[in-house]
Image (cartoon, rainbow, N blue to C red):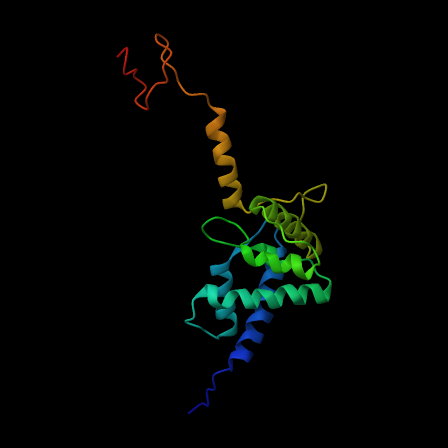
Length: 180
């Protein structure tokens, strides 16, 4: 019978942080690529063979904190900017650690923080050899967030439809309630 020993919590965190770094370097090698927290967690556990039933938000933050500090120690760009939430495409509040380690002040405005992360992602793509377009590429919000930012613009660009007789805004049916 094989002797199977479970890693200690410290050994698991060490292994997860090492794999997270490696995974994020791989993500950085594709221009405008991002990875969700959930995808990263699944890949970390798959590669290390060390599973946890702990809720994602209770363990991934400290692992990414280690990645932040390791990237800073190596002089690499901040790889954790590549990690976004599934539902909204944002980097999340843990991004404040990136700023703190870099000696930068916190960014209170969410969209400003996301633009900072977009710049950091571009630095990652450049540093880790992504195939960039002519001119070196541009920073970009994560696709889901970019779509959400553009959606309100599309709605406000179209003026409301108005009845040609009484000049009242038409309901969604397109038939004026007053004029029929």
